[in-house]
Image (tube, rainbow, N blue to C red; front, side, top):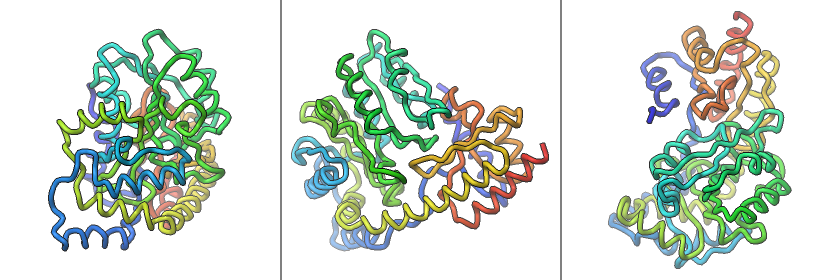
Length: 374
């Protein structure tokens, strides 16, 4: 199994000086003070031990209330919510709980770098479904029917999507739900960027008719609340699936850190204003970077979610890895080759706009000079 394409590139970048990075996949905002203060207060109170394997009950109750309000689907905090160490662990235990060797897992590509390797580590077989620039990197439900194979047990979704920023409409989700039901497929839906949907309201597939008990909903605090280092994720599913995930979690991670769980309660209960302020900044930055990339001749559609732009570099004649390396070497701007997110990412680069507005102006000026000089 190859190493992560992101890590390989950024080990090189981190060893260099004076680099403007558009590669980072985490908010540039510090966790809001009231959330940090909750962790500090918990430490002062001596809360330094293990918690229940499922997580603090008060956090599970906060998750239940938050998911009900924001995602319009109900989960029992006693037995249908599990607190994990980030959404990455939640994805791992979800797949390990339901995938047997030889089972097939469909996922759309370009996708987060961990998806296919995590499927392979369960001894599952990945079935890739490409999303296209002309569809704004939404998942066309027709492609699911075209790529379905006997033995598919799980459909893995991630909307809004890392790295493309693509989203799906409610109508598309209804078609995807119909596909899952007719083919008797379980859906694992990673919705970690849900709050960073810029136009319209995010819809969870778990909230659609007939999908609650067919879906494992994954979410967490890392992106919207700027809490990547706290490592708090949630897996929400019916009691049977939660029990299966809990066993994997119990024998591997045991529980999420208690201080992080205390901070997450504060985030979910009182963090809405902080999320809104950060989202406003991301949207302002998105509009800037997309406008400037297009002006440079790199076709870039307007992503409706996340904090990533995914411009095409096909007009330059370079492949995505060569483009990223030359851009880094010539102009000291780091962007991730699209192929780090699967074969479908060839011809694109991922530019994170989780950096300051001023950095984005400078970076896009340097990209423009680089492209014009090719």
